[in-house]
Length: 201
Length: 201
Image 1 (cartoon, rainbow over the protein chains, first blue to last red):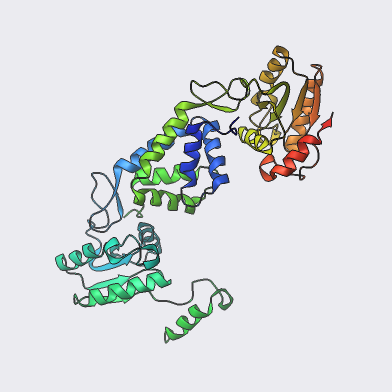
Image 2 (image 1 turned 120 degrees about the horizontal axis):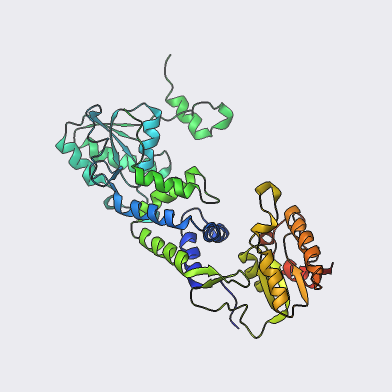
């Protein structure tokens, strides 16, 4: 007698959910059984997935997500400063910067960061589209807003060389103390950088 | 200018995922963006969800999940002891007990446990189908394998009174189970010991 298991469609669904980021075998099983029991939850989820698949794609210019048939509200806004491009790793970073309210230029989503260990090379990132944008428009400054981890720094360093050869000003997000935290909440490297980047008041 | 956000189909998908058990706003956003970037992952997920929705349903006898058009391999197995029914809260508990190898009778999935705080009353559980099964077949003993948390004990106590009135022997999993935990928190050996040490009520 083979060991009892869930029927194959149920097993396949659990396997699919287990492969999603942030979900282990137990949470995948619990989630799928919850979906089965809740009955009416599966169809809306299928609809949402179909819509996601067919109606959302990346803006060919900046790489942020737009809805099928709509213009990119960032690239086509007359209120934004087209002389300034902020380069970020992911689409989610665009929203984070927008919420800060500190930036009114255009964005460029790289789609990742250089990482030899994960086989991410310059060809895997949207670097050529960035150079094309510089040549097509009157961009004066590019802000590199990658994270300050090793891969983020390596990507910024690589891009900085490329962009300066194009004759454009290049800057990097300031590094220092996070807002609202005391000295006991930051690591030594952050403190070191905060000291070196100190501003005269 | 309204605050920038993801296009509506993307927002709706994130809202759907956020409503799933075990996923917060951040992990929902990360998961959906990951799906969008991975391209080929959405269609298999839709297929798996459609199959789950249309091909998997609960056995009308025991309540465990079966595939459309198939007989329940538990209820229709000639090798299983039809005199013994083990009552569990969830379908997942059936698999856990099967893996312990200590039980060869039939199962009955209640579909939950009594919980006045969550508005779960006896009418919400598969109690009447259990009584119908007792009357239709020569069941000699019912093992109550609910968890040993408050709701599990209350459900066992409620069922025990009902079942003894039907003239059937009633037992409970032995107190080898850790107090306050459901069946999903114990290992197979503990389950094995709990089955063998069951107490007659």
